[in-house]
Image 1 (cartoon, rainbow, N blue to C red):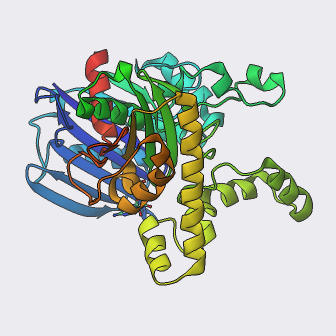
Image 2 (cartoon, rainbow, N blue to C red):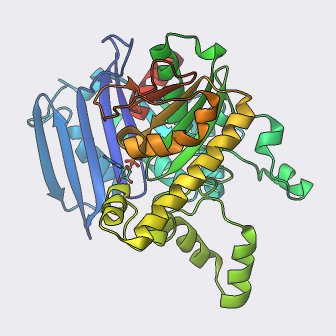
Image 3 (cartoon, rainbow, N blue to C red):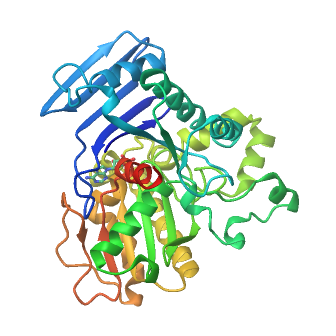
Length: 400
Ligand code: AMP
């Protein structure tokens, strides 16, 4: 069974083809084919890269229409050096990452007109993401006809949170309006929690895990007996931890102050908090942790402050998640920073030594998923490479 996965964003599209007849046990297999479109490359053009059958290509195409770009990307499955299929009809289904499923979807769902209308109705909650996800679904229908398409929601894993964790303490009208904590990165949190349980040789249903997705976007989830009981992202992905260019939680009074004293508009606040804050805003350099860490090593005081605040916020929110879990069996680090930064593992874990958590003396990155806790640690610490595309492909198989 061959499943195509599409992760459609506003400025990029990423796609993978998996063969699910290959063993599904253990770590995710390599996809048969992988491709991406980068729409930021050059005005009026798109950069297409693809790899498959041991070959890779990179082309700049004069295309501005997203559906046309997706069609060109999909063609590299059946034409040219990256060809891995005789015909597109060999694809059994297409899985899509859809960012916001609101309160409607707690599970992946086969896409039909009603599902599309619901994703459309949720655009005000995810204006940067849901339109791009829908466009991806329409483009696949254009290229592949009536193939089954499945929507896998980034919010779904968080949809069983207790009401006390999901409710914001504003007026009760917010509850009725759907202004609540939805949480995001759910596909990743769910995948790494299950993978961590497998690595620990235990049943996920018996574990209290704190999963830390630390990439350009950052969020934590408290996963108790396989269910997410708390998370740091909220009504939007802006809540919670400090991120690459997002502020995370700030005193809402700051926003009122900026509006009153400096005449900020909603759009200006949106840009400020989503694009000009976080590591980038505080360091004044970059949203990229590697660049900020390098500047800190060279003595840059702003970069040092940015990383210190990042770590402080991370520890504080980890403490909050541990309280929601009521205990701790494992911490799981994933995504760009979480998979690659021993410094972050050390600094994040240090305050929790009082729980008996101890890291190994020698820490290093590894291509494979690994347990970086000392043998006598009371809490396991797993570094797991997140595999959102593989998780989406598996969800398609289960559903179909
Ligand atoms: P993601 O959004 O998951 O692609 O993660 C992007 C973030 O991961 C950026 O801030 C990168 O700087 C960071 N990252 C990637 N590799 C490393 C590394 N070796 N050490 C620290 N951060 C890294």
